[in-house]
Image (cartoon, rainbow, N blue to C red):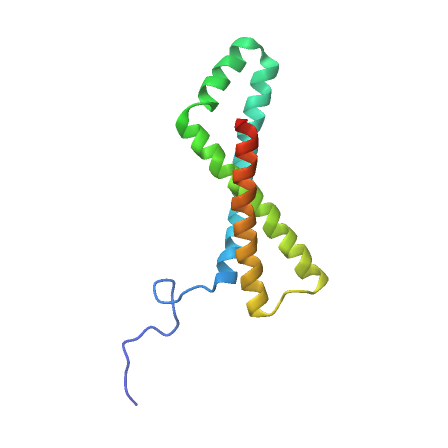
Length: 126
């Protein structure tokens, strides 16, 4: 019996997660990130209710370039979670479980999220 120095089971440095697993993990992470973005939204609403001075402070913070970049990313996360949630609803009905369809629907969810993000920001900037 030969002795191998190889690991008994693959680990994350060796094992490459399938695309469908990455989209599933990303869906869960996006849900957590949406909670953080909701706190920022609550801060903005509370500042608006607190008066003009608090709202001016919140507006100056939220309109800074780094925060705007984070809000842009949060918008993508929002639309990704929405599109991937629709994908999960289709799965709940029993469709799209074969590997090729699952991979394609994941790609469509990411593409749709990117398109919806750009459309929303273009509309907001006009």
